[in-house]
Image (cartoon, rainbow, N blue to C red; front, side, top):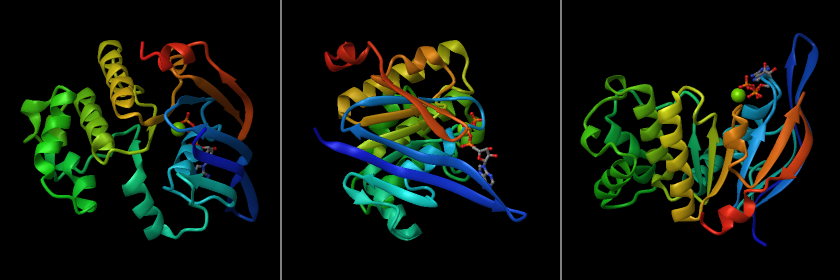
Length: 236
Ligand SMILES: Nc1ncnc2c1ncn2[C@@H]1O[C@H](COP(=O)(O)OP(=O)(O)OP(=O)(O)O)[C@@H](O)[C@H]1O
Ligand SMILES: [Mg+2]
């Protein structure tokens, strides 16, 4: 069993006005490469914070974050940015596309950062996959929310990440678009063998993954396999 993400005794605290606010408290779990998992829990329970720490966007106060056998908690921002570009895809709840770049250019950014060549055809192929082949020259402001979400999906997969984190990937979408985005997420995930970790309030979406962990008040309160795990392994 290959462990792609290993979290040990992870805590995150903030200091404010002489008080210590504990946002995450002694979290432990490990994720097998290629698997799918959902993180659920009430608003403010620490889900986004946890995802950011797992992806190396932020640093823990204490504890270990090991991504693809690399200790992130020991690295500085530049070193973490490098690991992210090599191994991580991230879909933000609010998309976070660069407003001054077209859809196609947004998808090309991670590839450019890696110094890869012939990136335009690859970015075009990804946009085609998410059904936006003819929208590559449009800026984010010219796209609907669902279209921006799909561009952000194409961008997240562009560097062929080993692990993909998605924070409320369907949070801002209507039922029909949401269904399309979810299908894409799982299809791309299956095709590329990527590990998928998503945060969601939608229990139906959570139950499509193989495993659900529940966070409450910064603590991990349950960690369960779902009965879809065999289906997913069979490629159904
Ligand atoms: N920079 C910060 N300084 C102080 N407190 C913070 C900071 N960032 C987050 N928090 C607090 O940490 C807690 C967890 O926030 P987080 O965004 O991880 O919650 P969440 O589970 O993702 O909630 P939601 O479902 O609403 O997105 C919240 O109480 C939040 O106010
Ligand atoms: Mg959140």
